[in-house]
Length: 202
Ligand code: DX5
Ligand code: ZN
Image (cartoon, rainbow, N blue to C red):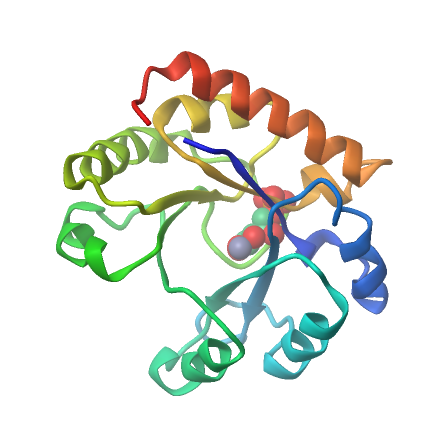
């Protein structure tokens, strides 16, 4: 499994988004963009106009995490901006019902905090579910990315990789660091080492 690093700009300086994206462009794989509407989650961030502007200024693929009510209404606009499809589930949501949908998606996101805010503590209780999700993906031979988001840091990233995650979102652990690019590189090294040792095939 190839490790993908996706720094979350939720913890970046929103007045300098293009610069903040550029700070990690050479070392990250994707840029994670948290879209929150203050309905689905109790926080408000940015919407499609900002995403469209970012697309013009950012070389990395944008990983748009839609935490919004009425996704049927709003998601097509993001898809038209150029997209693959992902499915996100909250910490308490079982993963088994997602099995039949695996052929329809490119990525499954297992939230490792309740969505809404950066800087929360990682929820260890998601790890057994992550392990089951990885087994499920392997069983289907599907090329589905398995993403973790929330509380991913140098303390927790190895546990995530060991349980089978291959896409790692990190907000405060990257943009809260003095050198965001160095933080991404350090997290990637940890994730790659733990992935190699995990024994997951592929
Ligand atoms: C939370 C967001 C995350 C957030 C993670 O709802 O989905 O992407 O940026 O922040 P950290 O890495 O600080 O937990
Ligand atoms: Zn997110």
